[in-house]
Length: 418
Image (cartoon, rainbow, N blue to C red):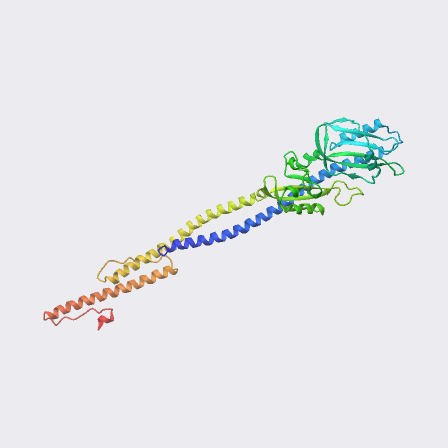
């Protein structure tokens, strides 16, 4: 390193400073880009989850409005609506609401019976359901709309995931005369939640129970029981507090780190609604690698630009230093070498190449000063040489008896003047 040329040292130092500054700026820019991308991604994720929740709410609102209308007509046992008309009303309700698989009008008054309609592959069937004492007692104890916990119901050889929702049927005196019960097919919401492209979206119920998930194998599982990520508790907390929010989350799908948006919503907003009994939540997540892809691209651009910039800068600095410093110092060095050769060998009459300064900056002033001193020194040496030669000639004449000769040349060196 000690023998390295000064121009190369300057180039290296300049490039090192540029790299250090660029690295710091690149880190700051990359961090800022990641922060902005995360903010935008989580905000968009929350909006998408909210849109899905609005869609589910709209479907459920239509179902409950239709059920309320049915409940008013079916409560009139003494009216003109016979069982045939009631079957037709139930079938029309099923056709209008494909998310309901089965509906029953159950009467527990003097004329105990159940009128049932079932939607199987868009075809309506009317199965017979036998009443038992336990069912009748449960209906008589009804005070408001109730629902069961989600469960699997076997229908036509298939297991359908859903839940029962029951409306009490009351007469004019508000006495319970029966119930309107329908089985809500949660599986029918799969496309509404996940979409045709099977996006990273799931429907969650109480305690973090997975009602709908792209991976059907974990349906009805408690999220915290299958995912060891402790951050799952935060998602359930958002649900319990009926609060929308986003969090970092380790997804079982693909075993990746994601951003997860939780959007709780009440799918029934009746006057009897309390707590989170009628609450679901949409969970929507996106891989962090996809979110930060733009930041990664930006980082690569910065690195590539930095490398190219350093190479160009190194070339420019090298050219500038070579032109302004290195070549001029080399000329000064050559001049000094000739000068020192003159001092070491005064009798050598080799001509010294004096290069006039092209500019009068620091190096130019140094070159001019050296040139001036070299000329003076050269004149002095030549004068001393002439004086010495003259003295030798006079001495030779004196030795030969010629005392008429005198030393005519005066040396510049004071030691020679004595």
